[in-house]
Image: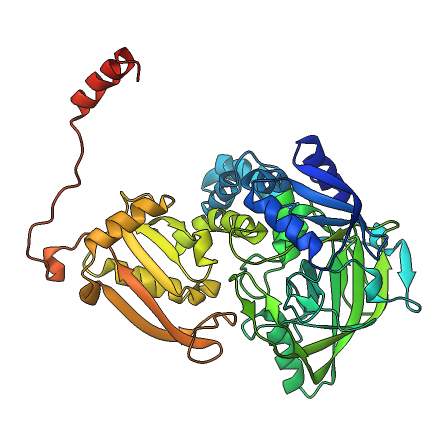
Length: 481
């Protein structure tokens, strides 16, 4: 049964023993960050701050900050169940004969449940304010000491493709400048930024946007998914929750937002208007430095009565975003294998902060196969930002980073097996030679074949005889060990 809204999710977390209410005053400036950082690194619960200093709106943080909470959010026993559903959809083919077509009908009916549904009204518009509001009434976190100001960190930002009319939902941090303006951190590769550029090229002067804060977990989560352009995130949210996302038209802009949202900011961007944004303590564990970004002007705020402010923090890993990213890794593996069936598994360790390191195991079939996989990944969506890709054989467990390091470091001849390429890099990569452009490295850590020029013998991994191991299992118990 899909969660109705954020409050329903909070109730599920509490029932599972995964939520702690903080009933005393805590300051959104730095103090909530310190609470959240300690909690996630010590395996603590989600936190609901009921009395944030300076605001009457409670703050929810760390709601996704563990593997168990991600399972609760997606209503599964394991996120691999979602991957299995995706794999099943990908295997759908045009059925042969009447019986095959009849068997397909229930699946087609299920797909109808994915598409968002427009409704005439929703809880997110219980309170409508076009005058007399201030963004400073919200308990927006000033996350880290050197941050340029308070940042909205878990927004669902809705824009419309000016060419196709299709909506996009992305998650971009928003620095609160004053009562009615924020930054809009659109990195150059993001869809919101692409819509902005297209409108400018058409000679337009304004761009409408709407920002929803707080919703059911699948809908919030959909905003961070690395989807192809013009694939509606709200449809994917419907797939994840097994029920359509109800969307309601905004009051002042031609956009729709989730009807169950807690808070909605409606407004516009003046095309060409830029303002200094940052620094910001980012998911790399370093501050991303200040730079010029577009400005979002808020003209209307709509809310539920007594809303809850959903937020997150990023910083030195692991943090909440790691668990959200780990679920993406598992969920999207079937999609990667659709294009690269030789891939057995992938892993993006916490220390790699998503884009700095990807470990890939493959079923090697021909000389140079590992390099073909590297280049395919660099040519696929947001995987193009992968700074280092390490490819190993299928018998290596890439989820065991220690095993990967051991096998890879034994298997490589550094000069022979490392490959460097130039291309787009993540905007937050502070080490790249230029903004958004730099080098990437692929490491072929597979066993080398004679066809690849390796004519020496390749040794076996040391393993104990299976019969001896079984015999010692019994003796081990006898010895009381």
